[in-house]
Length: 131
Image 1 (cartoon, rainbow, N blue to C red):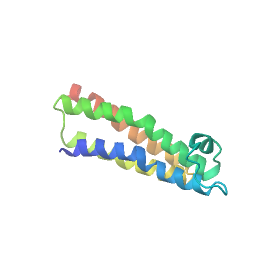
Image 2: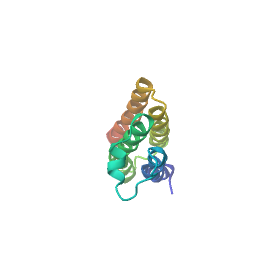
Image 3: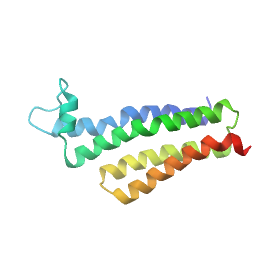
């Protein structure tokens, strides 16, 4: 499997992995622990670090479709090369950093890192036109 497809696989894993801090925040949120009967209500009540963890998790779901589309465009048009691989890897690094910066409440740097991931996807989408 190519590097770019491994990046797509890891991005899909990030959809689940970014839930881990949310689960920790939920478990610590009150005396009852993680409420598996009503997790969305408990998530909505999170504040501080827990609310940021939930926002980072939700944002991964928002970012994933564009990245998946970009990877599929590059792959299906035979545009996979060193630039596409670099951009896919950059997206993954940006998404991991984005999550960590969100948890650390570093909003300006987080937004810049988000932009790096977004621009990586946009460039991948136009790579076939640049050939």
